Image (cartoon, rainbow, N blue to C red; front, side):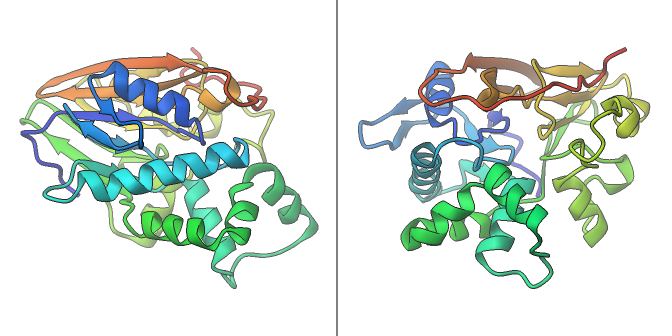
Length: 272
């Protein structure tokens, strides 16, 4: 989807149930949030870059879904001011709770379900929250693009992908914009070797590709490629890119320690 170029945007990386950090990041960037959790004043339109569920505790996952749900319908009453991009975690959770017949159930996938996709058990026992998640899932985009001029644009996806797949409507391309080659299945391979196209296709221009998905210790940037998943749930920070006309800025908030952090061994992107 092509975004209205007259708006400013705050593009937020992988939340993974870090609701306290999400609220703090919004407040830090000029938003006002009521005691009831409604965003009352929005200085920019909000884009969540995918993976807002999983990895945190069930209470924080539920709070995150509730906050996004109520504000999705609150902010978008007159015109769209909150956009969702589909992450691989939303995709897998959706497949589990809808009993997708193509999802293989094996001892390994059951272990992965409990370890990586703990939102599933929560939604399986909370029908109302499940319905809210399904509605949010149905509103997700695969990609969004902001074009200010011939010299400046920002394309956003959850995962990095080759240029040939970026904004394509083919099923293969859609999958690649949601999830890249698994790092957990290739733990000894440096990420720059596992997905070399990210740096090989990078260009010295202002047509940016912003993505999350890769859980890095800080914002990683090489030429026009930018990863803003800075590992909030792993005790790092929640980061965002701010698009103001033809400017690209960045901001972040540290993990607030209001839930137990997960553990992560970093495989650094652009480590050269």
